[in-house]
Length: 172
Image (cartoon, rainbow, N blue to C red; front, side, top):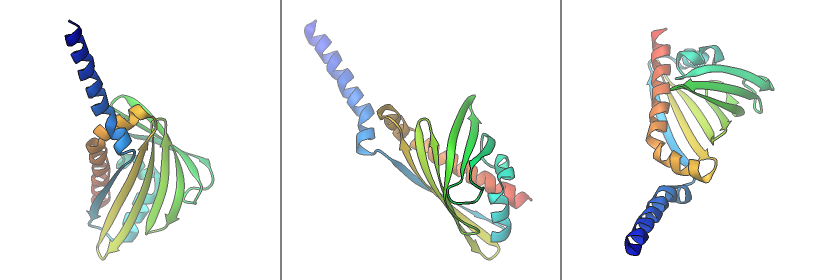
């Protein structure tokens, strides 16, 4: 009986190590998402950078509120609320870089993670390419292990949002 109990405990220990090891081996997650929109840069930028349009393409978007600074200025801070699958997520966005019609970078700081986002916009005649690069840093050991397993769904969410942006801009 002691051997069986020891074997079960050893198996549980191995499973715990397997579950938690990604948080040690890979403490941040990164991915990049691209979309090409069949419209010129100026119109794309205007619709993309207008906070009033966020609900038209950002999945689950509920609100954005300026906390400090002026919108579109480095250092400005905003509270963003997302509701998805019956869950509410709040994050503080801090603008790190804002170059009209070229690039915007910001940090989203939430309860369980920090997400550094860099969005580059490149006009190519009658089309515009948008590249979104993200570096996700989970907070806490358990969240690090969970985020590693959610990596593909986070990538899919970014792809969904950029696809929604493409549809919104090309439709109008």
